[in-house]
Each structure stands twice: as structure tokens, then as C-alpha cells.
Amino acid sequence: MYEPHQTTWFVLSFLILFASAVIVLLLNRKQKKISAVIALVGMAQIFIAIGLQLYDNHQLRDELKHIDPLQVKNIKILKDKNSIQTMDTAKKAELFSYLHGIENISAHHSSPVNEFDLYFVFHEHTYHYRIGPDSERKDEYWVFNLCSTCQPDVEIGRIKSIKLADFIEGLTKGFQL
Image (cartoon, rainbow, N blue to C red; front, side, top):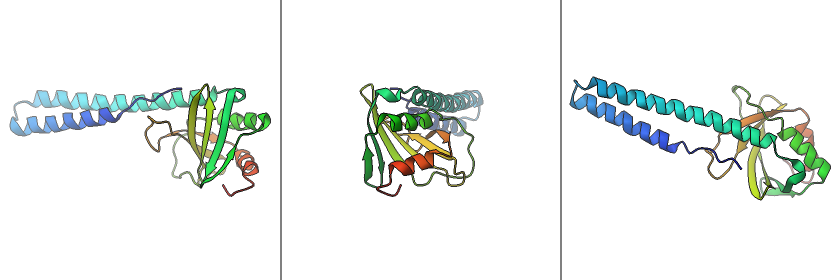
């Protein structure tokens, strides 16, 4: 199970560096070189944090694409305190065929709606994703990885499929997703 990098320390150290640069400038205007070095280090930290986030999202998408549905156990779909557990092999394979289609799709001005949580166990690790259809594009689903060390509300990719809505609706006939 891939564990994303914690980037909180980048933000905190950047703030400390920024404050240091301001203090050096205010106390001694002749120390501009020190302030410039501190600012460059701070900018480098921001670029590293962004790079790590992109790398983590790629790794999380790649991990999801390589999960073998035949080895997955305890699938649970949860929406508003209603849940569905376990699926036959054919439905499990179909669900993962959609999940394996996750891509990095450019952002646009919309958001996920009617989200549901997907839990499953693979190689003794519990995976937790939040998936929601796009508010504008009916064939697009946002995917969030909700692992214990993940940043909250960070999208890892999107699934483009017009059939996923029908599949989920078929699974959830007993309650409204």
C-alpha cells in the first residue's frame, strides 16, 4: 500500500523561512544576500512540495490501476449511512474495470456531487476511496484516496465512463446514492 508523503513540514518550514527573511530585511538592510538565499530556499521547498504531490497522485492512481479484483475482499459501498457489502465476482470485476480507468484529467470549474465511499481489503490492507460524479460532466467521476496519511480532499484522478452511473445505480437499488 502506497503511503503519500507528508507535506505539512514543507509549509511550516517555508513560513519560518519567510519570517526569517522579513526579520533579516527589517533588522539589517545590508543583508539582502541572506534574504535572497532564504527566499530561494523557500521557493525551492514549494516546488518540491508540489512535485511530491504530483508524484504521490501518480503513484496512487497507478496502485489503483494494478489492484487485482480477484484478490479483493470485503467490498463496501457507503452513502449516507446506507451500505452494500460484498459482490459476486462478475460485479467485482466490472467495478474494478471502471476503477482501473482512472486518469489525471485537467481541472475545470465543477465539483463532485452525490459522493459515496468505497472500502475494500487487498493484500491485508484496507483501502478507502471517495468517488463522486462531476456536477457538469455526466461521464466523469472524481476519485479521492482517503488513506490515513493523505491530505484531505485531494483528488487523485478521475474516471471517465458513462456506464459507471448505471452500474452504481444497479448495485444500490435498495437506497438512493
